[in-house]
Length: 115
Length: 325
Image (cartoon, chains in turn orange, yellow):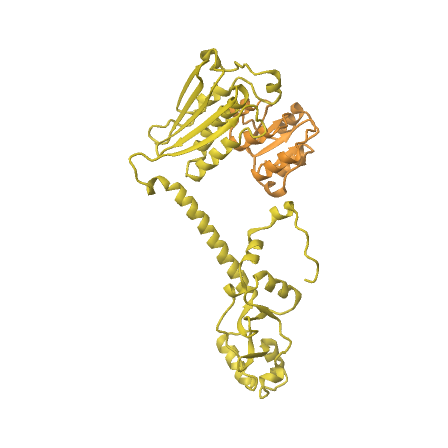
């Protein structure tokens, strides 16, 4: 699924520069504990999370995550957006909760990238 | 254009492409055509036609002595053909309103002049205002492409040099050591060091899988130093051609029960730490999964030393351990 399609499906807002919209994500995982993410996420996934701090972006960079979706309307600060742009990781925010966001994307055919 | 210089914000500056930068860096004389064939004002148009046809010119400057006095374009030749007036002199048909650019100006000045005028070529003058060359849009495109290619090769060279570092330097045992001091409680910069380590490994030619494994292991170790130590600690990464040794050490308080600490889900992290997304009790488990060898030595007196080794010799390295804890 293209990142632009993911944004549309979850009524999301892209918070970072619009330059990686065309890249493909291979699947997704939802989690709030970053060690859980590092333990089980496979490369090229989108991470859906309710956690909103710079560690999420660091985790994404280390674990080759393609995009981060913040659920429940969480919006990262400017510094986080800057870091994400630097690392080329799109940040998306959605009003839906974690369960709902996972559900929408799973129904749309996105597979789990949790090992 | 005549408009005021726009204020360039940091945000805008980030979006400036390399090509735009190059348009300011490259000078006109670097891309222009030198040794321009110039016509004489009393030359017959018929002769000019022959020259244009033979040399495939689309325009040429007209000089008297070394003074630049006009420019003759193919349109001027067509005009004289149409009027059946090939006996006329070049000076009768040439254009004397000259669009010139200076040879030491950046290419962007020529681009501006092109967009302001309808000309397909501009005359280039030197400091004394004498003809130095001619520049077309094609010259600029070629020059930019050439410069981009040169950039690309330069980056390739840096990568090549980095990845051949170990072959270029001969010693009994060559290694590269990276050290980072990690401060207790510094969540803002947490992960910076790991990020840099991962990038360094990629630049040195490590595969994405190896860089990812090292990244995860060292990131967990870095967060442990931030969360669990008295004063923070040190990350030390030693890169050798056949292995990467990562070490995290601190001066306390030490792990009470190492065996317990290695169990998945075991955590001593406070509620506040968990709120920040850590303390899942997976840190050491993650590290173990990512590295080929791990050693954890801890005491109340000496603090904790964590050694992690990843082997790079393909024959010895098992594939990435996909199995979970």
